[in-house]
Length: 496
Length: 110
Ligand code: SF4
Ligand code: SF4
Image (cartoon, rainbow over the protein chains, first blue to last red):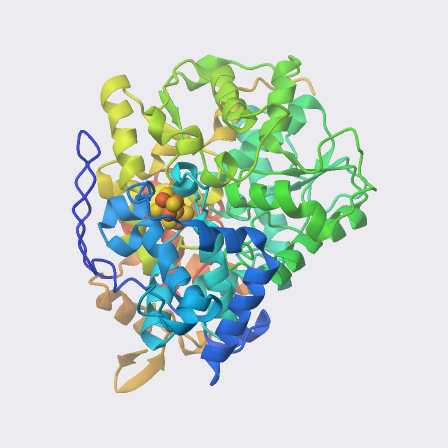
């Protein structure tokens, strides 16, 4: 373990003085040959890497008009510089969004613009040499692709897109990140990020059914691979495995039970998460998504519902139809796909659930908006539904709720610090420091309103917070799942 | 990377997990714990042995709930909590205990 100092929580957020090179040592483990080849990339840095990388860059820019505009339009106004949680937590100037973009942009200008080709020094264009490659590997793995910076940029320049493109280029020349690529491999062969095979999943679900019955006296089922169920629930595999995720899963099951909905999980598509997004790889994203389509067809379901996961919802909401559609075999009266929070909210609106708020009276809640839900997708059918729906569910299931400061929530939400494929132990220093802005905002509501728990709707956020909160003097179990609140409050009919 | 014990060297990955599960034995588990500055007592072994049994049956480490329930059954209800497991394995029961048990590290959003 590397030694590092946890930042001190201040009363007011302060923009740090820059410390060049403060995070230059931060690099995730590189994927070994077998992991790389398994997902279609060269096993190690190829000989003609420079040539191939530049060719790939040209391809990506010509395919994506957005990327080209992002690279061409920055006017260096500086509005984004202090908007990144990694910059605020580490003070490393390369973690200013514009500086991160420039690592890519300077190379782009060198090879793809007239001035850069002929007068590179004059326009600050740079060669893609080994030093630049190392900077890329380090700092494009210090971006969680949260898109907060883009909200403040007058041109909407999205560093997340640039960082995905950079990682795709790195993978194309054989330099991949171990954490992401190992997971992508498992999701494609076993069906989930954990590598949880069907018998283990079945055993785990059976155990949970016992727990619920013991606790409530009601037989609530967690069906697996049940043909002709109406709903296929696709949820992050962390929901089966980790805490506080599993309490969310129990909550979904209680909702389906109480509403009398027929549902099933699938052992073939036992993962909502899609790490293909983080490395910008369409092919890998598609392979993972296709498992969902195959499972839906095989089981003969009518609807697909996603469990609590931020980037999974981003991929599902924006791309599922393109990646794995058309879904003409599903019931067109429901959104395709639908989020579990939309399902629950809808039931609450229709008074179809009996909720006892006092079941959560031991808690004072706040809510962490996940970046990929807040800025990457929507929920419901009104603008801003992704902010309204989770908060309305909280208010319907508990009596004490306080939002954190305005510039840290909703569209301005800060990343948990572990998104974008950075949720790995080899990046723990970055994760702790990147959580600083969220921890500061949390501390404010803890001090001012006695908040005891922060609610999350993403598997990555939940794992990240339970890991980093103790560094800041909180307990790991102060982060909970939205559907844990629902599960606590829901009144189940015992006579069933 | 590797771990040395009694003049023999055993290959590990960057994070100290055994590459070949077949290399594992009790003494090696204790040696890995010592490298982290920990000493394994009978409570740790109870967890490690359960992990190995479970892995043998299911080819994966148990979910936290499965683990706490099993430990609660074997060692008494008050020990069947993740708080207790974190006291035994401060870096996380799933990850640290798997390492000493010679099992691969759980991957994913955990
Ligand atoms: S996308 Fe998020 S992590 Fe990346 S530079 Fe922008 S603010 Fe920072
Ligand atoms: S806010 Fe936009 S235009 Fe201004 S420096 Fe940042 S990326 Fe460039």
